[in-house]
Amino acid sequence: MKFNSGIIFRWFTTAVLVSFTLSIVLIFMANAAYIDGASIKEVVTSDHIRNALILSFTSSIIATLLSLMVAIPSAYALSRGRFRGIMILDTIVDLLIVMPVLVIGISLLVVFRVGGDLVESPICFLRFIGSCIAGLGSFFIYTKAGVVLAQFFCGVSFAIRIIKTTFDDIDPRTEHVAMTLGCSQWSAFRRITLPLASRGIIAGAVLSWLRAFGVFGAVIIVGGAVRNRTEVLPTAIYLEISIGRLEMAIAISLLMITVATIVLILLRRICGASLLGSGRVS
Image (cartoon, rainbow, N blue to C red; front, side, top):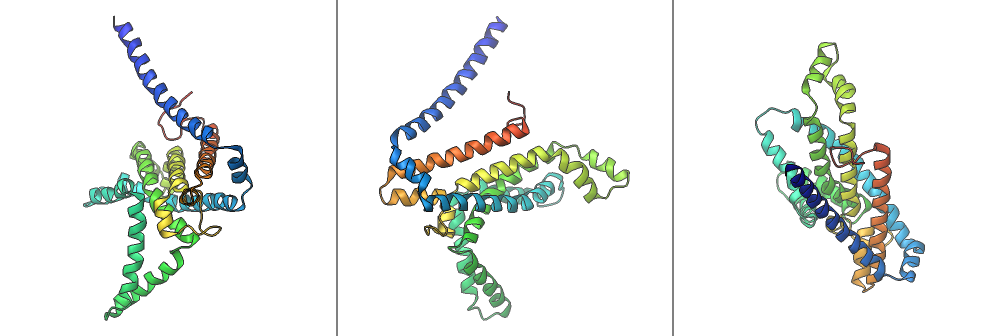
């Protein structure tokens, strides 16, 4: 009786999984059936779509590298930290995950606007801070650097969260043993902890990149949607919809899905496992 119950349960869970994945496949098939050959040809041959694809790749990769530079030490501090206020810092990191990307973009704009207002302050120190922020605003607002900035803030917390989970699974005693054998804390971290956490770091980088590659709301607010200048694929979709070319928008969407799928498959082949999961999927 228990054996039969186990079979029924496994069949039930598998049926739910298959049904869910089929629904995703049906959505993509509907999109593919909606567009025509002319839209596909235009996406493939269009200069501005090619430029948007290149900018999407370069900006999201730069944003991911910046995310890792922040995420690895931040995740380690959150994992090993035992000081007052660590819970507050951990909660603030999660705010960027639950916050709508549109709010992230608006918040970045407000920071630059407040900095511009501080330039008029009668206090010398505040004027200095305001001039620095205003200068950063000129550098980031409606520029490619602004696209990277928006992508960074939208993706970094995902990397921190996954890498922190990986550090949590590594026994701190391995570092302590290395330090008793003569390693400094930095050397133990570099030689012991980082190699053990490599798969989690890759997973964090992949999730951060996927988020940066597909984000729209924050990018269009901070970087704008200037064709052939700050246009990335998500903003290209918006521009096509705004002029009523739904077929082109769907064709660009399928291009993004294809690119993301190829990257995930390649990385999965390299790592030999499900990147964002904890176990091997065969």
